[in-house]
Image 1 (cartoon, one colour):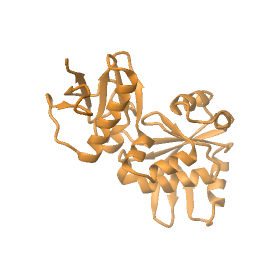
Image 2 (tube, rainbow, N blue to C red; image 1 turned 90 degrees about the vertical axis):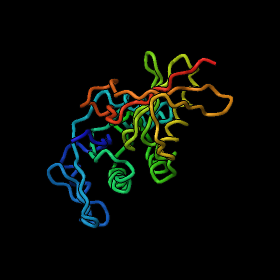
Image 3 (cartoon, rainbow, N blue to C red; image 1 turned 135 degrees about the vertical axis):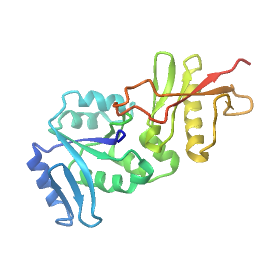
Length: 242
């Protein structure tokens, strides 16, 4: 069994009892139930695993980093004051799970959840941004789940495993803004076209733009049991000389 899709939601619940009571009070009454480690929707008969944890003293910093400057200071202050954390655990298939994710995260928002972080890629959102993205276009959904990271030698994406696709890496010899644009365009090409690619194929975002040679490798950035690990591997875009 592979790694799951995990969503981190800090909240005001002092303990499991308060969380259970908040779920039970949600309107309409008795639609959602929380028992053991399972949250259930009695209307749809759907269930999701919940890992309920004590407060994390590092969570404000984690949300600040994962929010990439898009989260308001007041929201981060609310995160700092959280009393517990609910981790929602889904199968690693965002397109298939999107409706369930929407329903259960809406419940967590309604009962006091502060914001959401995609624990399996490291990107965080406010509630308005989250629901706009997951209900939107393919690009919006990509933006909900995928982040770009600067490593020692490469810029790379993290989160394409939510869509069953490899992540992508570009050498740091490429200017950062150009690298980010290239990564996003290539990843959207994978999502929109599902092309049959092989080692040695070339890619360019425009006729007069730099050209890259494709090289597929296993994902050795993270251990296999790490939530960030991509079992579909990594497309390395090697810059070709002009």
